[in-house]
Structures are given as structure tokens and as C-alpha cells.
Image 1 (cartoon, rainbow, N blue to C red):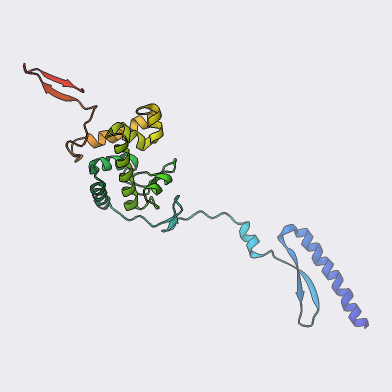
Image 2 (cartoon, helix red, strand yellow; image 1 turned 120 degrees about the horizontal axis):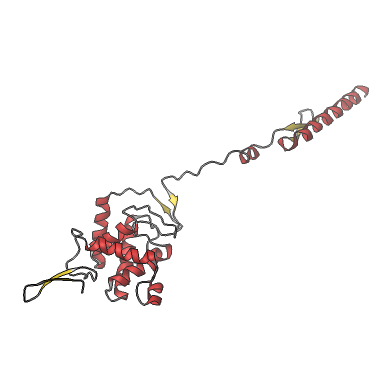
Length: 238
């Protein structure tokens, strides 16, 4: 009995020493209860759980893998398509929806410069820079999928051309700023971005070698060369 009492008395100071060490270390250690096979209980200080250590480590950089979530809520695979592949998709979508492929190419050049993973600060993505609501309206649930993006963009472009009775200026302005802004302005809105956008697309569309359909649209800003009955050469943009 005396020996057991001595052992018990020996354990208590040891426990107090361990507790003191624990509080001296602060949050870096904690008291853990250990039960030996004989049934004897010991209280020792242990390192914090591994999860706590990880939480104190240096944050890891985000790594984007081959499949990542797009802003539309769907996973997007790694884009693997060359310029020829995009051109093929443009021709197919343009023929399917009866839109001049040269106009589609001009829009893509201006919007994304042929980058299928382009993403704007306004939330527009892909080759034809579609915002989520427009993309889903035309069935493109992954705007970074070139086929879905081009098909939806051509559908939207055709819808705008029909809405504005073939007026290319207004259709392009609405593609950039929205039809609401065009309707309120009764023309091209007085936004520098929109005005520059309309000019850039039309410059790409009407430039020599664009492949545009001859009589699809008339360039209202183009300079025309006319010869009067007297033989005088006149240049005009009328």
C-alpha cells in the first residue's frame, strides 16, 4: 500500500510539470490522455493535429488542370483547336444560319483575336465573347467550347441583323453594348468602346481579301469612285 501511494505521489508532480510545459508553449501543444495496458492513466503533452499544422503553412498557388469549371457552371476541357479548325466551324455555322462567314470572322478577330480561351473583365468568354445569359439563350453551356461558342454567336448575330432589318451598324453596336442601349440611343450609343468596336469590325469585314459576299452589305463609310458623263472623276461616300 505504501509503495502504491509512493508511485501515485510520484506521478502527480510529473503531471504538473507536463501541464506547466504545455501552458508555457501556448497553442503549440496540447494535453493528451494515454491509458496503458495495465489501466494506468497518464496525461502527456502532444503536438497539435496535422490539420492544424497545414492550416498554418504557406498558401499554395492555384493550379488549373485540364478540366476546370467555367463561369457557366460547367467543366471545360482543355482547348485543342487550330486556326483551320476554327475556320471550319465558322463556315459550317455561317452556312447553317445563313450569315456571311466573312462577317463572323471579322467579329471573332475583333472580339478575341482567335483565342478560344479569351475571357473579358465583363464576364464574356470564348471566340465570340459571349456573356453567360446570351450563351445559354442559344444553347452554349460551355462558352470555351469553340463549336458551341461559334454556333451561339452566329445565332445571336443573325438575330440582331433581323431585329435591325439588316442594318449592320446597329447589329454590331447591339452585339457590343446590347440591344437596349441601341434602342435607347436610336442608333449607335455614344460609348467610345462601342463606336470603336463597330468601326473595327467593319474595317476587318470590308478590307480587301476578307472573302465577304459581294452584295451582303454596303459599306456606308466607303469612298466610291464615280465618273460623270463629261468624264470627270468624282470620289464620294454617298
